Length: 391
Image (cartoon, rainbow, N blue to C red; front, top):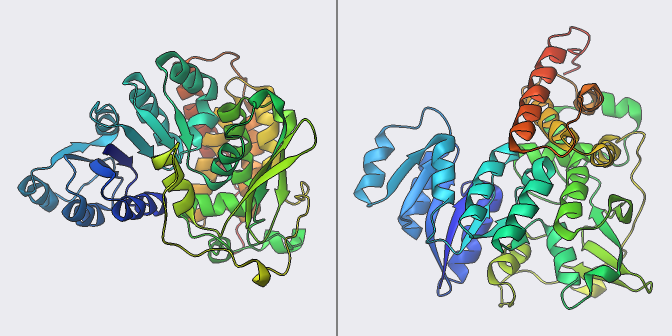
């Protein structure tokens, strides 16, 4: 029986993970769960899964729950230090990292140090510090299993193949809710519109990233580090039906694709049961009901975020960490209705090109670049010129 720790258990991906575990309860045991601030939901999860330890990483945790967790015999950890401690629990066979944003980096490194297998749904870990993370994983013989549907698709396609024979990776994207919008329409996008993704139900931050196509750019960087493929051999294609989750082309021109309904449970279960597959109760594809599978190139003029991610990876060093942190800050301001939708990417672009990148950075350089980018965005937003909102 595999022992599982889940970071971000109360988010959409974390809840999906627990659904998979519940359906395969004879194979998995939950020993640790974390939440940022949804403590009531965490307590409900604890009643069902009975972990040994939980972590509440946000501020102002409701005091009344501490006694409730204690009555269940569950240890409670707090803050960023608590995330690192729960991730370092050597009883775990797999750490499932479902955290949002840069908060996922240090817990991932802590788990790798303890030789714990990583099931990674937190793409920012590799965006910020891909070389550091992958080098440490290689040093300790740790496997990093992708949970994102696109990277899981690629991972599944290359099983049994010679990785040196990969010609290109093709990441598919739904295109988000604004694929057919004009430049004028994008300038008037509201928060409510941006949070209505046509295919997936996700948290607010990743939903906005999908609308700007920044999410796909971050996935390009993640794919580069996961699979060791040069950025010049990673492509993005818009596929609105979201049936093909990604593809791999080999040097002889053959292309393998992984298909399925838009459901994160498949990718999550594959990471947990790898190298085996198990039956899962879910909707299946009925091919005669699929009228078309369509593809188009992303419009880099209207959606420059993806191209900006490519550029940050080409710059290298601390540039991807700046891209990520600046995007997190800008998206948060949009969620607070302080800036326009189109301002998100404009701010990130300013940060990437204003930054003086450190080549071959260590962890302290990465964290310093992250902090620099956040302060840069805050300074930019204090500029009245940026704060032109049309809500």
